Image (cartoon, rainbow, N blue to C red):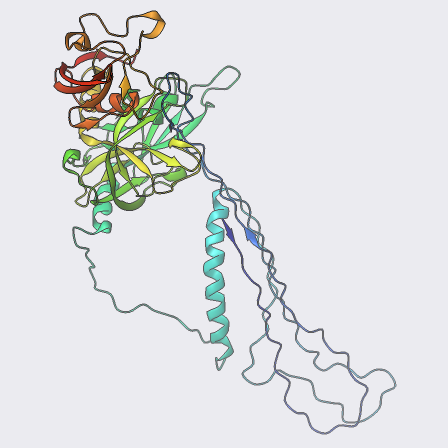
Length: 503
């Protein structure tokens, strides 16, 4: 991002009033013409914070996950200081050179009545670094506009001490926004949204507290101090690291991990000393969301806490696979797609509907050239959120036992083929059977080589899509499965089993 200020030359003083006749005298030296040095271009380069990156490219048996979005603090280059114009007054009362005669001497040169008094040169300001530089750039832009108005007013003023102010129109003493406005919804939700700072444990050669860190978002789940967020936001600090949650009022509390679900990409934290009066966000019903519904995303993109963006639901049931960036298991979701701006640092934050109810957890984006996942490239209007109905089920499991429960069909499917369905592999990992003996798929009559093309009312085009759909259900659910065997379509019913934990 760059901000350029064009220098404007300050007009010279008007000519002095006429003087009484005087004998000819040698010309007095003329003062140099005042000019204003054009300021150098203010160049502010805002670097992206290190963010947990979630890559969700086309799933493979062993996908190579990118890093999750976990932004560090943004830094900005020092804006160049603009040279302050110093206006030199014309020479006044300069003595005649030696040898010049004549009487009376010419009167001193004075400014014309009403002309602006030349400003005194200003000392150059000291440069500031880091985040301050970004603030200064904003001030410079505003200052450039204000300076222009100030000069225009001074040029038309009758004296040097008057001032010109610009005031807004009269406003109601107590301005209130309608409940359905974005401002009203955001104002009510922001106190229940936190910015999470995760710092890993110090590695060999580092002092305590010097581990890598990242930033994400979470929201208050209940009055006991549970915070819901993404697993990839807290994964780096889960083993021996530190976690803190900062509310919109600036107060920060230490937190600890209650449970994590890598496959669902959901985690639950608990504030160690939860304050009184916590206001949990209302949970909506993601099954009732419709394409075109308004959305509001709240988070800390690139470390900018309490940022609010808006959009709509662009699509539902979008299969998304993403890696946790640490070589762990992939996560899968049948996501809500939104065009609300979501960037690294938004991860774990709430996606709200027009009434302020949580309908999803912002988790991943697709950026140009990087496939699905959280990416430092930033938003291009393709954001993905875990439906809140699924996230709520996982959060309750984690609060209750600290471990997630996954529904399974008891079959290994090919994770690389796309477009034809999910093909049951010939064998499982490490040479194990592809169909778990006496498992759900075996009891339903499925065999290696069968191609699953439908699961419930969803069309299946790949292994990741199948897993995304399976995980929207609960163990014990009976689901109609459509498949092909030797090119012939068939149907069966699978009663889902379960697996506890991520390993």
